Length: 418
Image: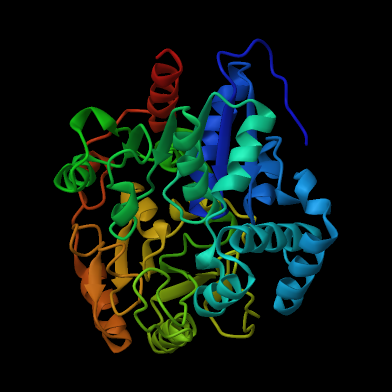
């Protein structure tokens, strides 16, 4: 198990995150800790490790657990990983370790038969490896755990911290409307770091104490209002030829599952492709517009070349820079919708997505919502006629001029002093 020594610690910090928007929240915190020469260990899962490597942040994965070398764990993991497409950013070794260790934890808690039944019904959503995370906390000598509102291993890390008796912080990306079922429970994390006062009020209504909820903002969004990022966005716009008078639309795609992981609602896995197809039809018949397609890192989609005024944005292009290069953003319920709002861009949300209730952008005044894909064309035309220069300003979140990263670090420090 790797350990990272960065000067004299004020209490070792264990950071735990999955990929996508979750690691994007904790990566700025890790960078701040590195700058302050604070000691930490970052458990990075799925695509999170690749994200951290690009930033020069050291991390560990499930394959680094000594328990991952068990022949039983490896056999279980190989069997469960057999249907995972090869060639992605997550190594087979890490997938085998993650699946094998989590399933072994399920067996140890429920027995073989029950574990198989749970996994058959819920898949990875059945995982909650509390004992495994307890062993990690003890092994690295963590004094505090910091994770996001993601379920499974991140949730297990916070539960494990509570059972061991060390403090924990849950950093919440957006609204946590589903996650409030467990995060809203008394005793789950010592501090909740939330986006704004509206989200704080939701947790107060759920029964959490005011002192436990700190409005910090989301560290992943700090860079959006950085002047250098705005300049980089304009440079990207010029380099890509998007300053030619056409209105550039970004479709930030996101995976749509067959069933909602929390409440079992039925979804349409083809929805992202249907939205893209509708947008391509719109572009073909509306010469004043251009479409930029951005696939989620977890999507394995072959971009269809050859369409006039339809381009691809690869995942290596920084999303915060990209948002300052386009004019209008279409999302289902991706965090990109909120980022676009903060960056001052017009946002359209596809509210027939299975995720719409988790991220009610249109209800929050962040987006213009459409209930059917067929409404997209009219929504785009209506929105581009408006001249509302104040739409999407960060001040509407009430956090203008503040650093969410530093706020979260202050919360960590306050708990370490207790």
